[in-house]
Length: 377
Image 1 (cartoon, rainbow, N blue to C red):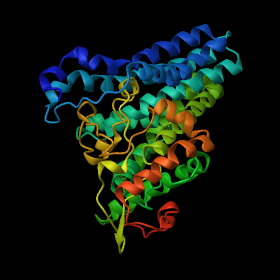
Image 2: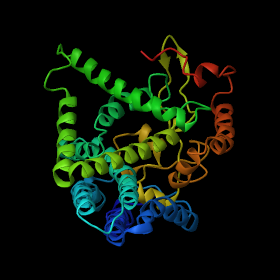
Image 3: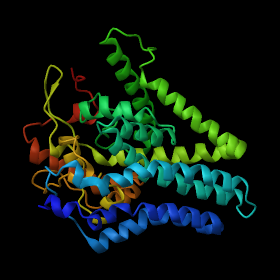
Image 4: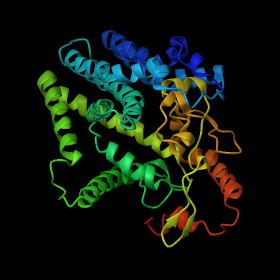
């Protein structure tokens, strides 16, 4: 176990600042133009996949009782990222729409890379921020989500996903044998509906209508409207198109990750709409060192669902006897997820092994495969 005194050292937090390299790379390829713009997605996916292969796994756990004062350098990167992302996103919109050396194809490629960064890093950091009690941190998370037009993810994640993961009521839990290209449109519609319904029900319990000003959807819409207006003012219609394109890419990146995190893992139905409690074995775990630096330990997802109040440096990893393990980190697995035949070949045997290990008494998995069990109460 890593003691809090060691964890607090700036040099131990420094690897989690590797995301700043992507900001520098975005500006560099924008200046270079041409095929150079493809370096950003290639670096995000393949560089970190290569580093994972080189550096291996990290099975060290920090002392979970470490205090906030010892996490300063870890928290700081998530606090400064929203401003850096906004400056980069809107700065590149201005640059791309006012530069002659970037062709239309180069601009599309450049903002594909921007979307990879705002999705891979920006949404991951927003996820960390939205889980905190400090309202200022949660607002920074809202800003990051507004930059990719996915603000309702906060409501869906906190009120639906964490409560109903592994049950038919959670649209984000990918079903066994469900390919990503079927999952993606289903989840886009499902999370919007479920998040709005969750906020509406929350207000109803207080005796308030859905259109009460306290409904966070009004804040979401205002922030997203401000982002769209900013893109239009800075870059005209071309700038607005580039903003929308990167937002789509970012959401696609997010939902690729969501697809991976719980694929085929379901909580046991106990009867009458009741389900077992969430345990570490209801999420796929990955101990790959470099991609966990980039994704601030998001791949230690088993512990995140078991203890969602833990900040990312304190998330614990579990052995194969406690949580199912992904064969590779997210950079590799997201590529595999886009190849459904290969994905099923890699993951379906692992799901079947998981079922035999944890639920040998269940003989009929069809209600779980098709989300036909009763909705949780």
